[in-house]
Length: 204
Image 1 (cartoon, rainbow, N blue to C red):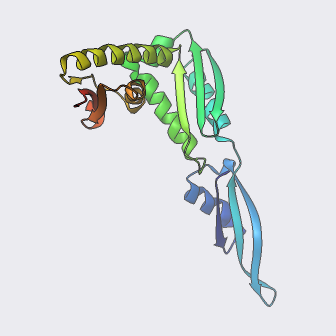
Image 2 (cartoon, one colour):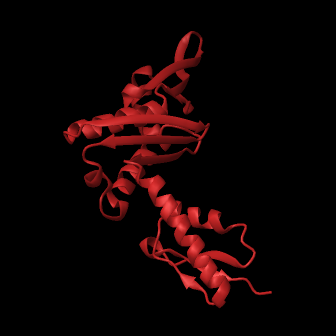
Image 3 (cartoon, helix red, strand yellow):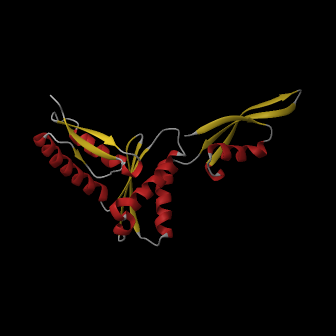
């Protein structure tokens, strides 16, 4: 759990200080006195530890649940933790197209919000994926087909090909799909929302 240790003169101020430093709501923080400091029996300060008392994965789940409840969307949410630092939330609703958005933009916004929230509550960088209606899995298959088809054409023609702008997750899918190819290589170019991949022929 994420925690900080600090000295403070009054225990009445400890929770406020911890909340400000951790940027976390007070309800999610436990305060533990590590040491009482004083001279001749007079208390001068306290050494305390402030620890976040909520599991980030559960917080992400409850936040998604509350989000859909506020939107009046009936959603089934499944949470998986594949590795110590990877969380996957799989969601099924009757409003999948609405929550995914055009080209997955709404889904990306939901994932970014949950990822930033979770990483604020832990010292360990968490990889957070949110999938709605199987969109990401279908998109992965589409990208792998596109990568293979384009790579074959580049290898044949010896002419580099520029792919459409993609987010970091999608670019990584293409990178990984073509990482073992001997005839082509991939490189990211551009900035921000215009960042894209270029598949280039390898010179021999």
